[in-house]
Amino acid sequence: MKYGLIAEKLGHSFSKEIHNKLFDYSYELCEVSGDSFDFFMKKKEFNGINVTIPYKQMVIPYLDEISDDARKIGAVNTIVNRDGRLVGYNTDFLGLYDLINRQNIVLENKKVLILGSGGTSKTAFAVAESMNCSCVYRVSRKEGNGCITYEAAVKEHTDADVIINTTPVGMYPNIAVSPIDLDLFANLSGVVDVVYNPLNTKLICDAKRKGINAVGGLYMLVSQAARAAEKFLDTNVDSCKIEEIYKELYLSKQNIVLTGMPGAGKTTIGKILADLLGKTFVDTDELIVQKENKTIPDIFSEVGEKGFRKIESEVIFDLGSVQNSIISTGGGAVLDYRNIDILKENGVVVFIDRDISSIVATEDRPLTSNREALEKKYAERYPIYCERCDYHVKIGNDAKENARIISELVKEGNF
Image (cartoon, rainbow, N blue to C red; front, side, top):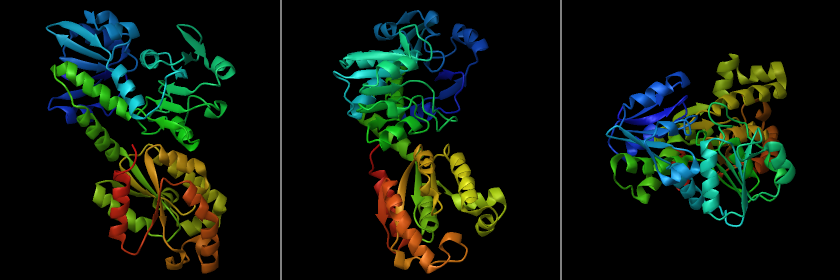
């Protein structure tokens, strides 16, 4: 291996894609077990590597030289092999610093809580201090090694201004969980999560729903990768290149979730969007039919709406880990906000708003099988569609034009 990333588990990693976009060199993902870690480091068969959980501190004794920043932080994520001498750096510092600055989250004169006790938490501590926070605390399950407990954080520091998560809680494949309850912190102005897969963890989704400035870790990943590549190749990467790769990668992973009334055109528009953007098309109603091996009217007949919604939520939860897809949802999927939260972890939600006069009631849709029922459901659901979407698109009759408009909206959106 010339260049690559080592960790115990790497099924979630985007690093290979990023480095391949940065420079034309071979970059590999290398899972190294705890038993083989010592052999790998002593063998030194690499030109340069990145290091992530759980090895950012464990690599230090194997290094011949360590940068001042990495030594001060006590964690290394980049190692360069210079004629058999291993030199360690911490490019996570610049990556996290760049992420916080780009998101306009202010740490100066703020109280900061850092969740986690590993190498990345030490990096975050150094970043917070460099940004002149008023005070900063690392939070862990156990007290010690410079950390307070979660219990202490909740008891004594609910006035925190910014929370930075450096734990793997909420990371793929264990999505839809959060390391801390944000309802307990009324003073928050910013939330940062270094996790980048999913694009927005539950912690970030919870923060955004509360109107808090919040961001996931993808930009940090791209920025630190660029700084690592600079060390590998003794070169420079322009900041514009970092921004370009970040947006390209984000859009390539992001789902577009279509909500709206039955008959609004979600399936037709979704399939066109999938072709237009090179994404996979998924229809939650189709997945429900496949899962139960029954038609939707038959499911309603057997278990009622409550039973159907339970099955629908199970299907949507399974889609929470899916990326690079167009997801067409059933008309009532938005009624449970937890469905939308799951879908927003990797997606942006678009309300397909077709004028009710142009939607036709059909017998294969149990809750909107006649005109009166359709109009009643439309009135009930409309404010929910509006509240729980990221984009509200009033559509016309040209499906291709509707798809183009949605595509452009998402491409120009905030990242």
